[in-house]
Image 1: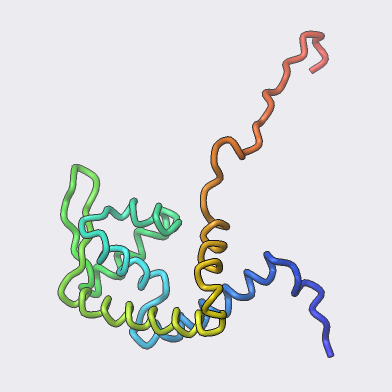
Image 2 (image 1 turned 90 degrees about the vertical axis):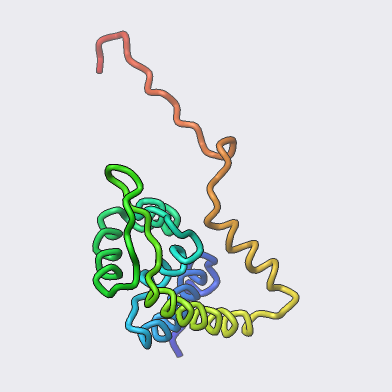
Length: 158
């Protein structure tokens, strides 16, 4: 029997749980010929018609360099439409095909979430979600450690 010496480390357990959940979601989403990131972008656009590519990236923590090819793939598949917002930005919305596919994505995600929550006692659902959200919430400014300014040496021994 192999012993996992890390199983009681919360960060490690969280990572293992994340991998298991995302693998299951990826299987469901693959049936729709989508990657999980593409599916989540569609859901965000559905909830926020006219959102810019930059805003989607910020919300989902997707690097700008990755957002351009991701939205290009969705545009090429006629799942999203672009409308100029200003000189440089485009608002994104779902096409008719995108709306239909997003309904299927939302159903797949709902099924995945139900399977996940079925593993957790009902009485703990609220606490579980609150604890997860607390882990990725931004730290309040007062809680962040302050950096001390480097002192310049006046003795000439830099």
